[in-house]
Image (cartoon, rainbow, N blue to C red; front, top):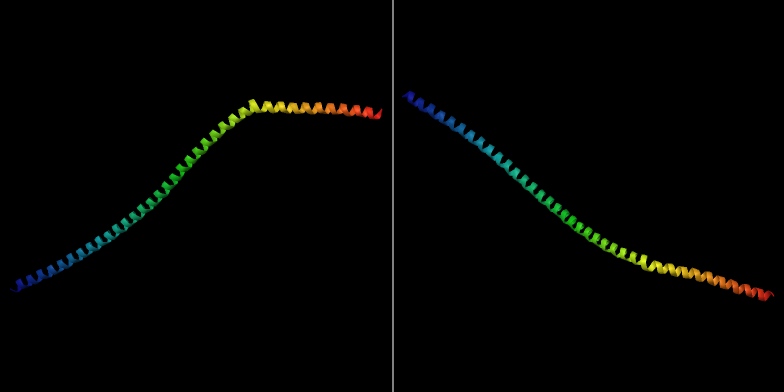
Length: 135
């Protein structure tokens, strides 16, 4: 019976060693899973930060695009205003060319002619007085 008792002792020791090995393997597996979980958690946090940065960047880009659209609208408005002003100036230039400038030319000619005529009349008057006063 000594052999049976020795066999049971050996089997008990083998069971203890196997349980220790399984316990160590399970402990290592749990540590590995824990590390993977923390790495996955950190990756998810990094993904959230990236998504938040993208959201902020998107908001900034959207603001720039809205500003650019408003600026384009303002440029279009100014361009329309300049076109209307140009049409008005073209019309005013046409009026000046065909109505005002000829009249101004006539008035200038009249004034120049009047000055010349007046000068001629005054010279004649003062020359005659000069002859009468001297003679």
